[in-house]
Image (cartoon, rainbow, N blue to C red; front, side):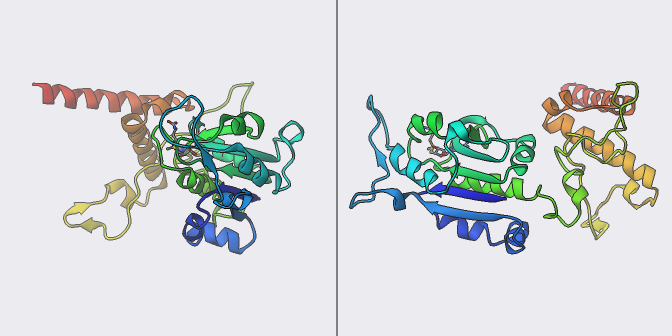
Length: 279
Ligand code: SAM
């Protein structure tokens, strides 16, 4: 897989690519990441990449010509002929569709991903209309440029590539992980097969040594040595974290009857706690 990032700050990426899983994946040739200087595709003495917005208003806008030239220098097919299951051109924008783990999985199936980083007030909209397949936002906030967003996307996608994580199950058994359900029976999908395949929930809490840190000990279930007890505790904690921090995720998660029972218990004890506070 190859990422090409178009940016006015190519040096930004040198440090982000030098560490951990990403650096290892680049070292083993599982992924290539190249950052291209947009100013290298200008033709004037000042290497101008931006201009004032039509209609007036604040700030400057990235011009279309250097971006089109940069993308065509990469040998990517024109938009009308592009096989979007193999290659894609992304515009980073706060107005884009949200970047999620599901979208990271989609991108991990590509052979080539081109990412255009905006700056200033943004990018001439014709880049989006004529050159890009998708406009992606990494969250509901405004960054000063697309570089951090590009680094986030590259990192999240690369760790999903086959062979990049030491243990291939790691990407399934973590927050927003793949469903881990029993085979469908009579057309009906079964309940979660294990209780620690996250199936779209948030991850459960993790602990390591020492078992007693400054008087706070780890949950007893984790030292029981009883695998079933550990599994149930972890599932309960995943459900609890998701209920507390991201209840919206519960809507799209396949829940077993046991999960639903745990959620009812958690909600009831939450209510009792709130009632006590209100008294
Ligand atoms: N005027 C734009 C708006 O209000 O949506 C903000 C432009 S922002 C200052 C400059 C660039 O940062 C954008 O063109 C985009 O490439 C990048 N950017 C900002 N927020 C982003 C986000 N949430 N996700 C992805 N890219 C973002």
